[in-house]
Amino acid sequence: MGTVRVHGIGASAGIAIARAQVWKKQDQKISQEVRSPEEELARFKTASELALSGLATLYEETRLRLGQKEADIFQAHMMLLQDPELIGQIEVLLAAGNINAEAAVQQATGELATLFSSLEDEYMRERAADIRDVGQRLLSCLQEAVWGNLQGTAREEKGTSLDAVIVVAHDLSPSDTAQLDTGLIKGFATQIGGGTSHSAVMARALGIPAVVGLGQALEQVEDGDLIVLDGTAGLLCLRPDEEELSSYEQKRADWLREKKRQARWAELPTVTQDGHRVELGANIGHPDECRAVQQVGGEGIGLFRSEFLFMNRASMPDEEEQFQAYRQVAQDMNGKPVVIRTLDIGGDKELPYMNLQSELNPFLGYRAIRLCLDREELFLTQLRAILRASHYGSVKLMYPMIATLEEWRAANRLLAEAKETLARAGIPFDPAIEVGLMIEVPAAALASELFARDADFLSIGTNDLIQYTLACDRMNEQVSGLYQPFHPAILRLIRQVIDAAHRYGRRVSMCGEMASDPLAIPLLLGMGLDGFSMSASSVLAARELINHLSFEEMKELAEAALKLEGQEQVKALLLERTRVQINA
Image (cartoon, rainbow, N blue to C red; front, top):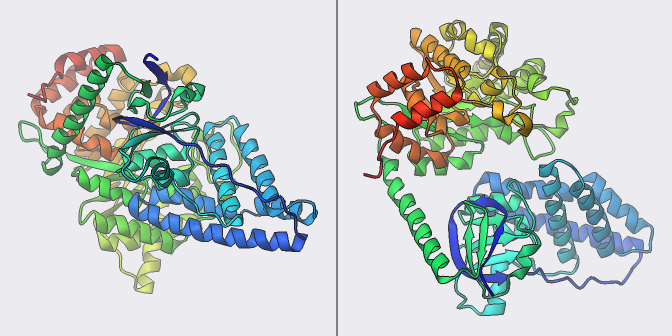
């Protein structure tokens, strides 16, 4: 048989070359015996307790191994196991007296998973896998089965001396993926799944290549087939010929060499060839992501998206829970600056337990600082938690989506109230904590001089600033061509904000996607941006680029770019003038 190439969704970057291990979850032998309704209910409750206990263990193991974000998947599973709607449906089925606990679990979880699978929203569709995972865990507990994992199955079939493999499966549950032994399994490919599926999240955390959504073509793979898995391109190459295999082996070697070469930049400062220093930080959503920031030499946390502490749960985190998370980040960063953004919920980020009304234009509606100023107790709780954490490191506080001076001043009045409450209680905090705002609303950019007078720092959030300025929904593919980071209006607004901040001696940074764009970095540097904040995975490449640039030359480049009439002209200029042989 010849070479077969199958395209899917690249869930985790990198290249793996190994033999295939086709994995099929063994069908469980489900008992057909029906006892009394009381006995079946008792069996189900016992199984639920066992399942919860197992999930609690898996949660803790995953938290220690991969981090809080990945462990939160199993916290969501525990919540599902206690969901009154699901549990109630199973209990109703058992009360009828003609069905056993296994069948009730299969029916209830199956119906719920089918419902989620039929939804239009991709993220919600992929949650069906979590429901099935919980159902399988319950069935295993009912049968007193051992909750096995992939490598255990592989070793049973191939022996303990099995070489490294690429797992090929219809799907992998979060439980399966979390327990992968990366010494044995070098990557995986699945028929179904998407970039936001939990198996994809786990693959990225484990650092192994993964391609999902490959469809029925994956059924051509047999045990022992040689596979090339290109997680970057979203490609599976089955039974490659000698020429293709040689090409991929070289590509994989180049990729590993590039990763190793870039690692040396983790220990170096971010400074241009002519001695201009800028701060290069990282964006995080969970405390445990600090480890990745430290590994690449991140010079601080430019954006801690605090809303992720509020998501994937059934209720609001209290002050103590928030404080512990913020303190952990402050301590882990060991004196480096940590900018915590207050709750930025709404738009494409929802909290079901807040029962927010649906809106025609959610990105322009009741969100971020607007919601917090309306729900003062929620906001005060978070402000107190952030203030308490400021005692343990260099914590800064930042408000999102500020549009008016009235909002800025109202937020600061509540901050003063939170400080007073803590002072009266004798709880330590940094009374001089720096307070800034995100410039992501065009009104704030145009009035940036007014904000710069009072604020300790400014941070430009380009993701929203671009869509608001160009009236272009960044989530709408039909108008994606209008989402132009290099549009003259965007560049002028950025320059105006930087100039206003510097006029009052304030630092200004950027935490939007534009901050990590290799084409934009030279331009932003030349405009005078003081700090760049991006995903930890982008830091090394950005530092290498900046360290090979001349600040004086980039200032001239910025002046030239600001005189141009459109995005394509700006991009052409940048491509022409910023060619840097960084590998020389």
